[in-house]
Image (tube, rainbow, N blue to C red):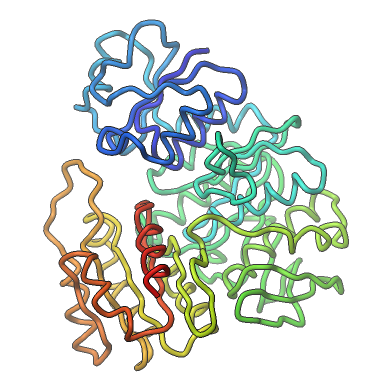
Length: 445
């Protein structure tokens, strides 16, 4: 087949595009991000995988394509969309096309408002190390899957196993019909809790085999999901951790008497690992086998990514962007430093409006007297979103509570305060240039 992907630079679309190219299909695509940055790292990897990149002006499309797949971030008045429609090329949205792929494989869908990127990537990596040769389509970039041709957000294997990150953002998670599902948690993110709960109930209903749930999540356990298997850190469950030992940059624990070590920090990563252990055990893999490979997993790009760890100096980069993720990330940071400068870039004007009160509450509760919060301008990737909220609308009530919070006009202002703190945490979604900022801070320190 010959497939065109519009919005190919996004994590979800680039994963499917790379996956289909590796499966032997002809793939081309476009992205306005690449139009602005011809040398973008993701573009280079796609081109190294023989994927053609065209401007996002409709010129890359012709009648030779079997169909065109569009990111949900691409508007219907975009030149690519108009050209595909005018040429009569069949149009699919990314999540709808992913649903087709899901149905063609023995698929494990990993859902939840937090942790699904790390959990799906970890599960695929462990399955690979255990000789199961899985396929993988994710949102996060697994460090150990990265090559010159692969950003790390997909993998092609020889089996019919497929692990996917099942994102609820656009609501189409209800169309997936996987063989097995993991639902990590349920909190406010792209939709209200009630709306997301309905989606997760439908996903569970559409799953032909086992559904694994986090028994510690009150919102999730209130859903109408029957006959699920469970995992937990606190509550009674089919898979429950014991003898937990938190270290600054790793976690030790046991499950059913088997000792495990995870080379990632924080309670939230403990949940991610526990979900993987439970799913593998449900497929007949022994806990001893899982324990032998778990410490090898080195994580996902921009998930507690260490840019500097030298003496008292520490610089971390993370994807945390909703209140639940931020709360978990800050708790992990508190375990490694007594004084942290947090540098957060809110993601999108619509999400910031939706989560404004959650952001404010999370930072008021999570910031210690010794900590400081710097808010970068809201990330804007183009489009028609109303720009009627700013980072200052978050900073003012946080500061009024007595916590240190400041909205910056430009990220260049960050360098002016670099000597005030030893530990810096840069975080926010989608914008890979935040990693560059973390690296710049590390180099200056």
